[in-house]
Length: 106
Image (cartoon, rainbow, N blue to C red; front, top):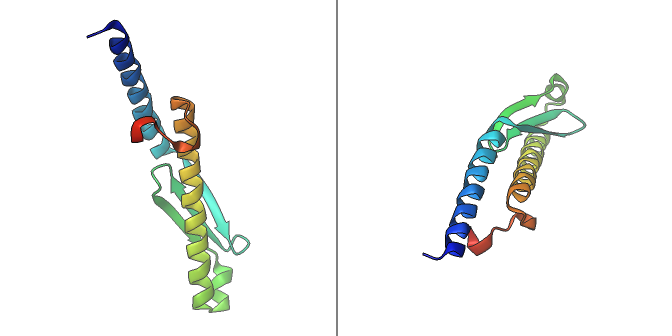
């Protein structure tokens, strides 16, 4: 095995270790999104899991099922998008590859 190949493997191992650490850290970080002027609030973690969904008392007074469904979908989608962006930003810091793209399709 050549010296350069050994160095490449060593660097790859370091990046892999850093990525695993970031994934663990991201599981504990959260983002929040709201819809309907705050009537629905959704919190998601860095693993793109919804960890909290809050619906204000105000919306129950409206008695509009379709509105509530739309607001829940909007808040959840926005929270998941924010979570994905947060994860991509952290991965880019570790790998140096922009746009969430990893080399060799990783």
